[in-house]
Length: 147
Image (cartoon, rainbow, N blue to C red; front, side):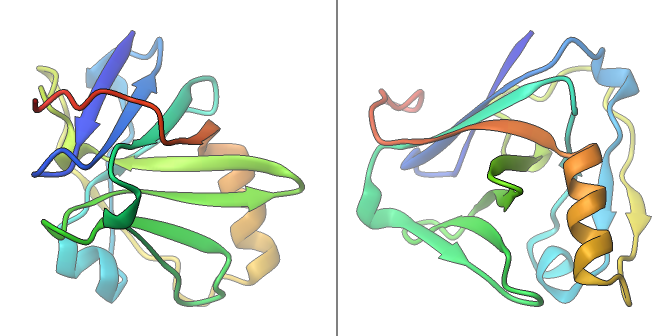
């Protein structure tokens, strides 16, 4: 089942495909200062797929912090954080911010607070490879669902 997400102004979008029922999604509220400041509620499906679309490339900001291996995708115009992307062993993996879903599906659970404080870079990469969604990439060819 495909789900569409977008920043507020529509410059950045994503398409998240999963066969999981929304009531079974693992919704996480990372407790790092970045995620708390953005009110992020993240999910992923290792059996699903996500594609990020950038309609206005000049509006995409890729922010890195911590170990510097993950790109947090933020709209420069409206400031919305839509998801994160990491390359691990030559493959792309991602999470989406469920707060950016255009139509949040019924049955989503509350976010479970999680902390990855003290996690090594190797353990973080392993966890993301095992739990994050395979990413088909970031494309610049799209039509905004907000237009």
